[in-house]
Image (cartoon, rainbow, N blue to C red; front, side, top):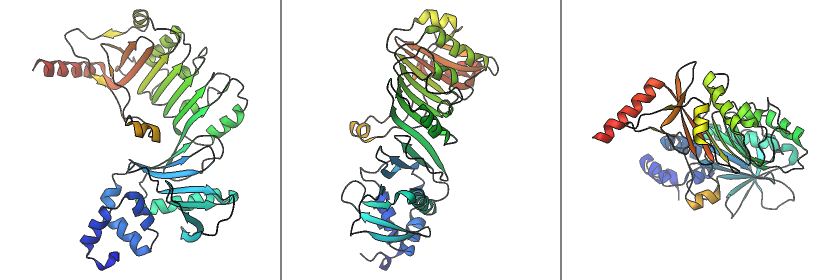
Length: 369
């Protein structure tokens, strides 16, 4: 189909019915086609939250836009292991790069030699910025601490699904990898014990969001050192004094100034609700009030293929609806506290106690009417 023989409005309508991933492929046809797509699909591009680089354990990278339109990816990066006879070359951001078409989920594959890996990725990233605009955000999902994450504009780093066992002996390399990124958006790991692996100043504790599955919790490192916004922790053992210390440090303003949400599940024992609430000086909403529900957009949305197929992608944190709350001394900020058997949930409102109480008043009035 000769796109440019049609009037502009018809061209725009045709492109509007093409998937975003296919629009990206079409942009390589010619500079004129690229500029047409950019000018006609500007509002559509604004609906893309970010572009995600998903790096698997073999170092192969899939690239897709979020929210996803389909299972297909926009692009794939593969290190060249053996030559092929069907490469074609394109000039991208001033560099000549080898491509191949694929019949699998990644229709277009970028090939690179080991020593050219970072330069090729940077060239493609520059093309993304030109195509989608300099305000587009990017995420890099690493599944291992090799290879390194290239420093790219507008890129936030995520570390997903690292699992370490009892005999983990590569802590120095892991720490060096974490230190290679100024700020981590999200870190997800399964680990036996954190105290023997991570230093208190580790970049792990500075991540915006963490999800930690820890077999042992004799030293509550994440509770003590976390400096980010959202944390979900599952552990085998946690002493109640550790939870009390966490809340009291938040109340005093000595730590957790950025915290928005914490959920902690203890596998071994139930949490003594009344004892814990008394120990942290919890306050109570009256029985004539309806407590507001605390929930926030997740810092990082897990959208792997399995969760998408199951239809259970969660965009928000688990809701916290509780009659109990605590107040931070320094700024009178309120936080809801919910204890459900083995789960401790803590949601910071960033509203004063008076504002928090007015929220519950409004809900009560709404309920009465």
